[in-house]
Image 1 (cartoon, rainbow, N blue to C red):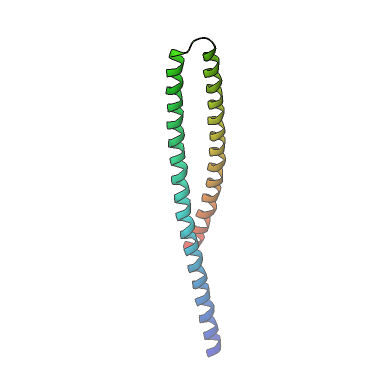
Image 2 (tube, rainbow, N blue to C red):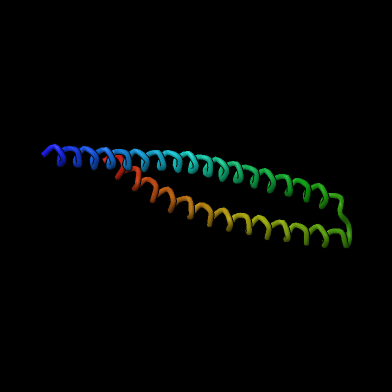
Length: 114
């Protein structure tokens, strides 16, 4: 009987230890997720600032542009627009991945708290 009690105690200890290590891992993942969200937000802010700066630069150039230089500025504006669209697409993909990871992590946190 003492052996069974010892076995049960060991199983309970291992179970609690396993749950504890799972929770520790979840905590680390939450911190990593927070860092990823901060990086995404910083990137969004930088993209908006970069876009605004580009528009200001093009505005200045267009005001003084004459003849063929207008075509050059127009071409550069088109290239910039394409680059911003590409960044936007990458941002959308990253946001979907983060959203999926967040859902998974929250589900595991919820089961850890049960």
